[in-house]
Image 1: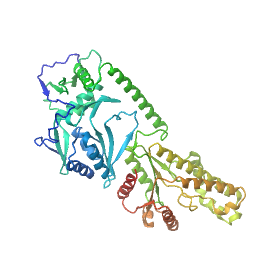
Image 2: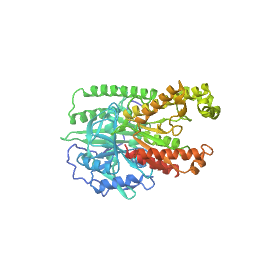
Image 3: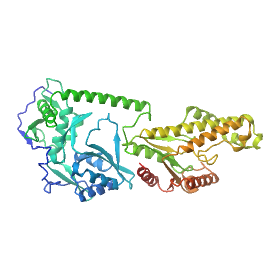
Image 4: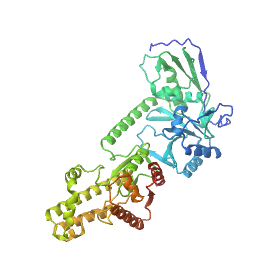
Length: 531
């Protein structure tokens, strides 16, 4: 890119005045004369049309401030929806979202999306087991990536909204002129170039913001964005489409930054302070992200539900799809929240390396060893009985550590989804104690048996916040995992689960005989309503 760009092409002004006052309040929320853009092909979640229909019926002053391309993914629950809301309608907004079981997310203060007047709201779609992310703004702020300080665009500052129809519901979307105006104001605080460069090339991350510009093909076209500030101040910014791409005038961006700071009451050397705070927060962000990858769960997540973390336990016999559902639910909630999974069993899931190594050696002989322990009660071979008692205590310690860790993670704000959960009601089933009762009378082994019992009693005191029982008949388990479990053992587990539910009325039951998607949607509904 040469230092000087030929700007002989005629400049086209993009009319884009704005004001922080209510002078433009007389403009309609959605101009009836504006061309509508249907999004019939978008696989939008049904909750999207229900939500925006409720907004329209209550007369909310709101609009979507993002490009149409990303809007499609946002309505489908695959991307954020940037919503600009009039601050006087905030209580009504909260009321509508709460009626649809929406919840608010809380982010750590060092992250780039944390600033005054901005909140994360999430609205579930129980029919699809997904949720919308509303990036809600009461006055859009611009500035450095980690220092968005200047509230420049409020709802009244947007001159025109263009309606987009989804399932017959009108959704106001920012017009092309206002979209460019917002993009240029954001770019003014983030673009940089060498000091001797007069024009700054717009990077790939910003080109989507200018994708809707009506540039004539095959020729240079100079455009100018005009800003009108409260109090009569003005500013303009020129940008040029050339053969090398889109470029913006460096001096115009600097003037726009000064004007924005001035109308917000910041004059002097605030640019240096903004840069320093931005760098400090970004360094903290990068350090925290690195520590989270190195030591998962030891640090608070980027975002958590406003009510805090949650421990969810999925319990059921083999073949009910527990592991599959834990994986699916973790992926769904991890999209926007801190979410982790825990495994409390002794199967193929994660666990202590010592236990897994010993299990690999002993697994081929497990049935023979168990039969030796139960044979002739007190006449069991002492070495085998002692070895299995030590094995049971090792498993108890591992499960106790997993239970305590799950609650620590939830205290830090994570949603922890557990595959299984220990119980102390019955021995030998559903991750309960495993030392046979007759070993309590054998000297030496009785101490190990009592230790195991105490550990399971402590685990019983650390109950999950939400317990979900997956139940079905034996035919479903046999179809999914042939030969994994006998019918007698399957029925014994179901009976124990019924006894657990009789003692704890908060346990909820899920029919696991339905399809994986149907069961996943039902689990999602129960978990979401517990957030």
